[in-house]
Amino acid sequence: MPNPKHVSYLLSALAVLLVLRFHLLPAAFAGLAVHVLTVKFARKLPTRWWGGLAHKLALAGIVVCVMLGVFGLGLGLWSFVRGHHGMAALLAAVAETLDNLKRNLPADIAAILPDTADELREQVAAMLREHGQKISAVGMAGFKTFAHVVLGMVIGGMTALHHFKGGENWPPLAAELHGRSRLLADAFDKVVFAQVKISALNTVLTFIYLAVILPLFGVQLPMVAVLIPLTFVAGMLPVVGNLISNAAIVLISLGLSTGVGIASLGFLVAIHKLEYFTNARIVGKEVNASAWELLCAMLTLEALFGIAGLVAAPVVYAWLKSELKAQTLV
Image (cartoon, rainbow, N blue to C red; front, side):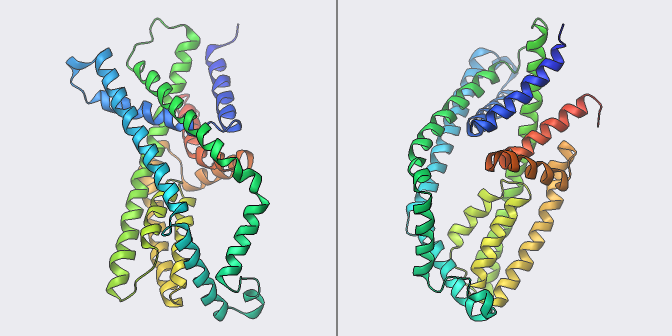
């Protein structure tokens, strides 16, 4: 007779592969977010309120908040892409930076860079035409993803209702699967919500540098209103997210002068070092994982599943580590 614990591990691994293979990560993360937030909210309710009604009220409130958050994020991204102060302004700033770099770089390297903003736009347009078929499917894919996210939130809320129910009379396999889901929710809670704190800290420090320190020295960096949200969103990816936002800030800084670029690089390196410290304290302490472990997991899953694997890697690795720790293997 198969061991229920072994079967639950096999089904859990299969579920991870299916979620990544069929692009269901947004739905899975939305469901986990609703589940974790609902449980946190329900735990703060007075004991006398516990029961079906309290859980349903908590579920309804969290689902509405998450749906509003997803809608606001989508609206913000659309405004950034289509608005004149988003991608268009960022493209102009990058083109100006390239013009400045071409005057200071060796001729062989400068010849590789576009000569004008119009040439840069033409290269972007050529890339869009090359991938036009994929881009034309973005609208339909967006509606499909939105539907998946809504269903994921509903499922996450339904599973949250069972969190406080005892499993003494559950069949063996159901009890084991419940144990796997609890550890997954804990891993998601530790990694994702801890990463939100880290990203928020990095964003505040970056805001102080861009909007306070640089202006004190008479430097007005363009695109601050875009770079600050970019820092927070990119910072949701452990380790590599900070590198993405830092590269954008340094590139825009170089558009002003080499000195400003060097100053930005030095300041952001210091922030990056601080992220290692905070990551070790907030995330690493919780899941007993260092930065190099997370990087290895992210590189492996990115090679197998692309961007979805890169995003899912910290949660999957933290879940794996918690399962191994529960079996006293690590």
